[in-house]
Amino acid sequence: MKVAIVCGHFISNMGYIEVHLANALHQLNHNIAVFTTSTIPAYVGSLTTIDDKNISYKIERLQTDFTLGQMVKSKKLVAKVNEFNPELVICIGVGKLFPQPIYEQKNPTYKIVTLLGDNEETYAKTYGFKKLKNKLIQIILKKKVYELSIEKSTVLFPYTPSTNHIIAQFINPKLVAQLHQKSVEISLGFDENMFFFNEEERISKRQELGLPDDELLIITATRVVPEKNLEKIIDIVDECNQKDISVTYLIIGFQDDNYSGNLKNYIQQKAFSTKIKTLPFMKAEDVRKYYNAADIGIFTRAAISIFEALATGLFLFLPQQNNVKHILNSENGSYFNELTTEDIHKIKASVTKNRKERITLAKKFNYINLTKKIVAHSEV
Image (cartoon, rainbow, N blue to C red; front, side, top):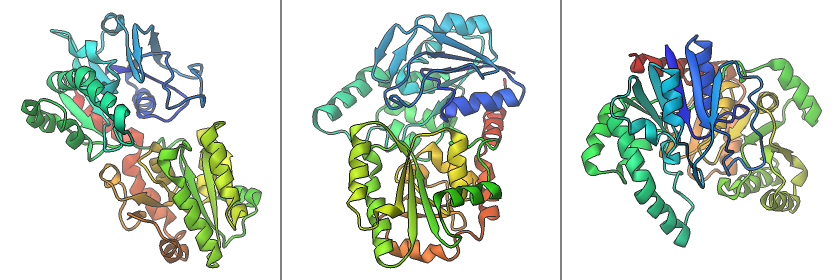
């Protein structure tokens, strides 16, 4: 099938859903083209640059005519998509406004489907004037394009269990039933060619880290920002070691900014600071090696890295919230409201035993399988 992906940002060397979807569609022998901009969103900051050298499918980067925060628009979008003449257009990132002209066409020659990722964290952590400003932007600019996406898409693919509930709160109530009727729930996932378990990598990395065989290694790989509240995990790890529960904690994702510096200082003040290791943001294949070395993954917020860690067979601790409630069962992890040293102690003895079973359970989140599901529900 000839497929166009329309998204405001596309950073090919980072693991966001639009990149994985494009790669998977290409692997499945669809003729694809990505229509996007050269803008790097602020949440990525200085972590990356645009690099399309190793991409084997078409990427059309359009000049922006409007930018505000993460929102971007290009007047040339419709003409360029129509020139490609796709059978299917997949729109991603509705809140960035970029797909709006696609929805506004009167009689498009192609089927339109939309991926929706809004969840309870999308508009969280804003207060006072910032909260008011976000609410006004949502009403004035975003409400219209969300409503258009519901009306003009033949299928909607929410990729967290809380997505539709969040969107239903700010769209026209008359469209809520249509939102639910058109929705086929999917998920974020992982690239099986990049994330898998490898025993040799485990042995090599643990030796490099100076870890004995019986030492429990906990890992968090994420952008290190205040919203992740990593101080609480650091406190728990320090407390474990004070109680003679020997645990090493590795955090990957430090940046060259004030908060990363402050968090390193916070760690240095701990009694067992040498048991907490910090590493910068790194390439996916390097992260995988550290996942393989580890025994437990802890994540405090929803993130793509959760699925990547799951693919290596890690036992995961995830927060008790709706946007991740579809990921774990008793075999591959546990949900927490407040993680404690007792939680770590209970799992320490048995955590590495069922790695193969956990990898098998994770396969439903493989992007090839997720993409097949999207295609099956979008067939022209």
